[in-house]
Every structure is written in structure tokens, then in C-alpha cells.
Amino acid sequence: MAPDEDLQYPIGKENEQEEYESDFNEQLKITLLADIKMLPVALENAIQNLDADQLETPYRQGGWTVKQLVHHVADSHINAYTRFKLGLTEETPAIKPYDQNAWADLSDTQKLPINISLTLLHALHSIWYQVLSDLDEKQWQRSIYHPGSKTTITLWHLLKSYAWHSRHHTAQIIKLRERMNWY
Image (tube, rainbow, N blue to C red; front, side, top):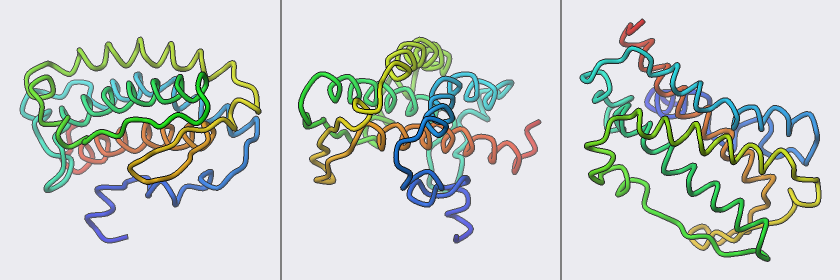
């Protein structure tokens, strides 16, 4: 991986993850659900004691600020929760893609403190985890359609994607803290 890719993808790209191609199995499900359940606490720990200037620091050159990352995770995971609910209640629904960069530039991300998004994430992940915990193997094989990538995605694959997403953005902040010696 190129040096900038190490900063952008500190845990590796999603499709490089060991579980990426894995079929459904109970042990992997437990691990992935733990990523979903623990994301709010992990993210909160990653930003603990950062001051206003540090929150406005991009995690890499040309990247989002720490503040934007936290708000982005909330935005993304609200969409994820909705995508799962649609996938569970409709037959292969088309989901709504969104421009995450445009969302990161909206006034809520710019003006609101990150504790708003962290509070939202705690509540959202509690609800989301509950829904996911009760799915059986057949439900994990239900799917959604992503019109942006023109792909049909199972809920199992979607879980793997958002578990990676949780670890990915948390690691970006942790790696920035390590480089800047912010401990």
C-alpha cells in the first residue's frame, strides 16, 4: 500500500479484509455484531480529550477532519440502519445512495459539536444491534439493490461492510493521534 493509502486505509481496504468473502457463519456474525455494538464507545474513546483545534485536523492531507469523520459515521450509520430495515421488510429494495462528501460539508457537520453525533450513535447502535442480533441465517441472505454500483447486496455482506466501516474510521482517528502524539 502507498504511504497515503496507509493513512486512508489504516486497517486495509474493505475488500482486503479476511471476512470479506466469508459465507455466513455464527462465529463471524458474533464478531461483526460486536463491531456494530461497540462502535460508539470505540469512537468516543478515539476522540477522548481532543481539543477544538485537534478536532479540526484532517486525519490525512486532503482528508476529512476528525470532526467530519465523527459526523460522517453518524450519517452513514443512519443510512445503514435504514438499509437493513428496508432489506428486512421489502423484496430487494433499491436504496438511496448519497453524496457523503456533500453531507460532510453541510452546516450540521460544520457547526454542531461531535457529542451530538456521538449521542445519536449510542442510541442508533443500540437499536440497530438489537435488530441484527435476532436475524436468522435466511434473513441474512435477504438483499438490497444499490443503484449507484448497480449491485445486489445481501444483508450479510452489508453487515461485513458496516463492521469494517466502524473499525476503519475509528482507526483513522487513532492513527492520527499516534502520528501527532496526542496521548
